[in-house]
Figure 1 (tube, rainbow, N blue to C red):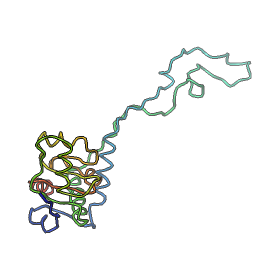
Figure 2 (cartoon, rainbow, N blue to C red):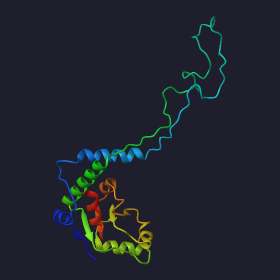
Figure 3 (cartoon, rainbow, N blue to C red):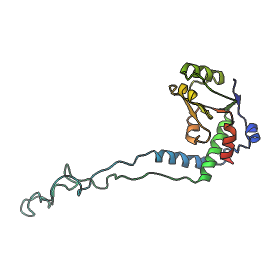
Figure 4 (cartoon, one colour):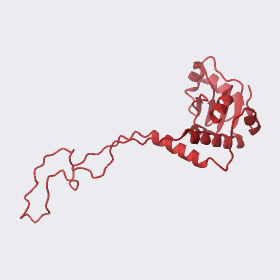
Length: 202
């Protein structure tokens, strides 16, 4: 079960659309920015002077003390007072058009193909669900020992065997995203993953 290097000719034969270095850079940037923004919870919250604990009693009389004029102790200049223009719960979600997503995927796949980081294999499975068996099967496919991304439709035993290997990731071709590709040193396309990616880039 040896892996074969994926070339531009293979992509053309599978109708997988790739783009060169002249376009798609901004699309990749926009998509990664959206991924990271959408992961933000936006739950940071501060209290204004109307929300902090305390009463509205004037802290001292208006005149005659020599101090500045003040109202209640919940003013922002006092310790324990409200916060001015502090963070409030909000959504950081960003939407990216489908055409931009498609272009970004084409660009990253093209870059990785030119860098010879993508390989194909007919099948990959671990029937006994053991990590040791998974590592042995992976070694037959690639000698890489860091940041290996396997793209395919895997059975439950294979997923079980891979879950303890932190430097590998299993993902289906329909769920594969640009960020996962960028964070990988080696990408293994299993079975009909190429045809699915061809549909996504068409």
